[in-house]
Length: 174
Image (spheres, rainbow, N blue to C red):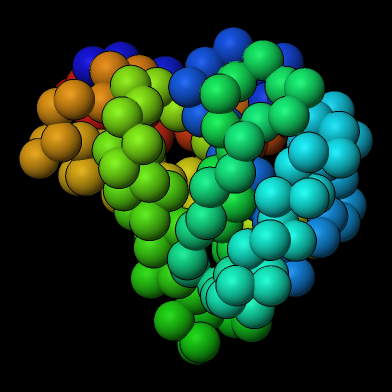
């Protein structure tokens, strides 16, 4: 099993599943959400609309899966991260749930690899250092009991998230 960090554009990764840091409406937005919808084309939005019709969107901490449209991955897992409100609204657990529920969908759909963006660290203002710690710790803990996932990549768009995530990964090797 490989757990690693790379700097780049998550829409370019040829992997079983990429994760979209979505909003509760699932209908696209800014940041990574907008980039995934633009690069993947209308098939992703149409799949999201079907999910909305069936269950009314996606709650914070939950995750849903769609096709990847024109993207090189097989699937897009849409998860809704928490908006940071000072840490008093269970934001840490909600963020951890994003990773756990995404990984559960990977297993349910027989995927072996997944790429995560830095969930909630953009317009949702989750502190990047804390988010990196939660991401790496949560994924590493989950993988201890789920050996069928072969590769997890944390895809960082900026240097700060890359460095913070890389530092958290180095702690696992100590």
